[in-house]
Image (cartoon, rainbow, N blue to C red; front, side):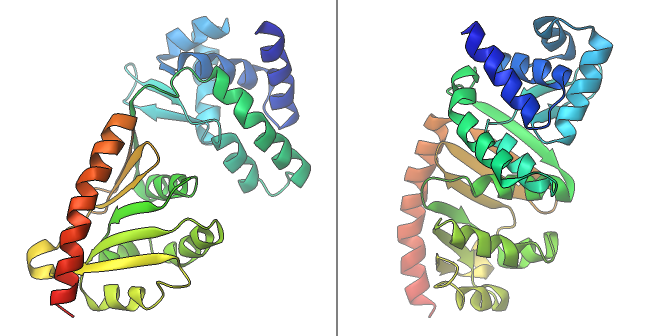
Length: 259
């Protein structure tokens, strides 16, 4: 495994990470999550350097930070994040992006927490965008509870492009939505945006947070609290999917009743 890790480190440096960033990233990939001290010890560097490097990796969205010093905890993002990071760097070449995509399966083997439940929190508008970007990695249709009015107020001008990219990735979605003028306007685009909406009466079922269920994840976007949450757990996601199917059947009945 040592030789494999050494080769992975060289490849990560080719993709733009510094030698120390690579060392810390690989250490955290094996740990899954930890404090600055735990990660620095694993990486074989001092705590101050470790904190600076972890902050740099967080800026690249390869690492997630929760809590405040001195109790901050750092968690590695899924290996696919390295591809997303490169796509945001205009100077990166298609060759580097393809190289990153080829590395993802190898990085997954190192990723210690890929099968362990975890919860990640993202704050502010950028945090909300981050959780939506994660849904674009879904390998299956998304199940959603959504409020079109609050979505578009919460992230103005973000969603038209998001809908387009989701459709281009051939990721379809079913959504239970309060029936409002904004919701009806959005439904008129269902075909090109690969979506099916079931309306529910807003006077009884007006909800604000959006919930997306996909793969082994549950994403929650709280518009009023400006907070994005991703729960990664196969067991929880499976239960939420079953609950959703019950809700969808009732939503379809209500949708037909209020047409």
